[in-house]
Length: 179
Image 1 (cartoon, rainbow, N blue to C red):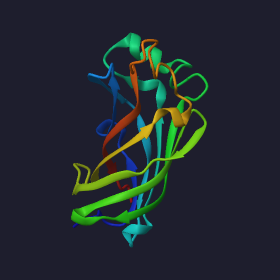
Image 2 (cartoon, one colour):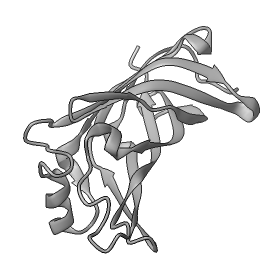
Image 3 (cartoon, helix red, strand yellow):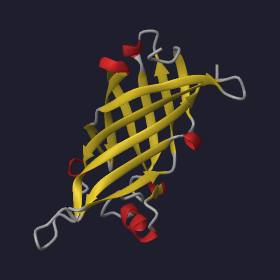
C-alpha cells in the first residue's frame, strides 16, 4: 500500500519531527528542529486529492545552543514576537515513481508566502494502542531563507558565507485518524 486509508488525520506533535539544517562558515552544517507542530492531513479516495495544513511554533526552535536559539527567535531571523508561527498549506500532490509523492504547497514565514515543494514518502500505517489508525510520512525539501526576508549574516565582511541561504528540511510526521 503506497498511501494510508482515506480520511482526516491529526498530526501527533509528540511523535513528529520538523528538522532543518543550514551551511555554517562554508565548512559545516548547523542542525535544529522546531519542537511543536500541529495540523491535519486529509487523504482523499484519490490520493492526488489529498491535502495538508500545518502550523509550526517558531518560538520553539532548538539547535541545542541557547544563545543561537535566542538569536534565531529575534527580529534578525524568525521574529517570533511578530510572527509566532509559520504555516504550510498544500496546493496539490503528484505521484512519483517508487512510492514517492511530490507535495506542492506554500510556506508562510515572517508574513511572506512562497512555494515550497516537499518530496514525501508514506512510511506505513498501524492501529495504535487505542485502536486508532496511525500513519507516518517522511518528507524532505528546501527553502531559500532570503525569499522570506531572512537575510541576516548571509555574507561576512571578508566575503565568505557565515550562514547559508539554503535551508534543508527533514520531516518525520505521525498522524492519527480519530473517526
